[in-house]
Image (cartoon, rainbow, N blue to C red; front, top):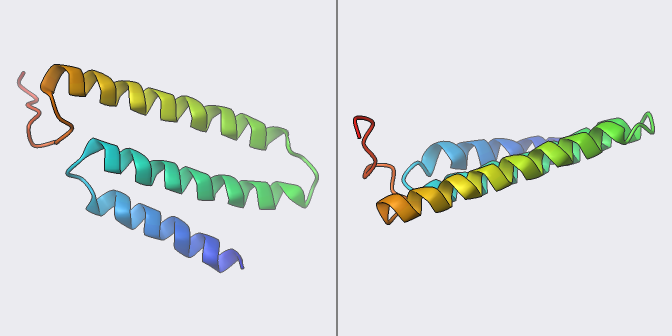
Length: 91
C-alpha cells in the first residue's frame, strides 16, 4: 500500500517536470505532490499518535497554495497569460 503512495508522489513529480509550459498546471501538480506527502506524513505519525505536526504541515501547505495562486493572479494581470515563455527576466 505504501508503494502506491510513493509511485503516486513520483508521478506528481514527473508531471511537475513535464508541465513547465503553464504556471497553473505546475501549481496543480505541486499541490498533488503535497497531498500525497501529507498522506505519508499522516500515516507515519498515526503510529505514534502525534498529529500535531500534520496540522503544521497542512497550515504550511495551505499558505504555499495561497501564495502560488496570488503569484498566478498577479502574473495574469500584468502579462495577460500564464505561459512561462512570455516572461522575460530582463523586464
